Image (cartoon, rainbow, N blue to C red):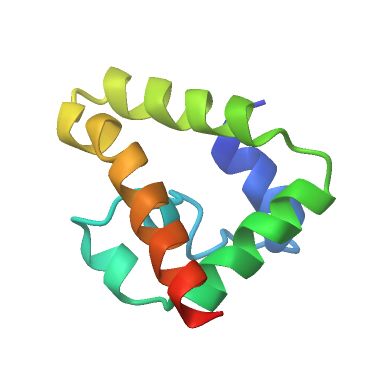
Length: 93
């Protein structure tokens, strides 16, 4: 199952979930990322993990999807997005 379909099952209840690309979490250079605060991003990740999805698997599927879409910049930004998210979350505590 594609990572977006997994997110749809977790979040959508029959409709496409508005953050299904997960650029809100993994792409700090996107407009989607700026539309959510750190706590909202952490809540999304926690809900995904609570539903049995492995984060490393999800990230690989995300990268594969954007690699196939020829969006190398999105693939390369994942680590920056996670570092940014963790840094902000730790500062808030």
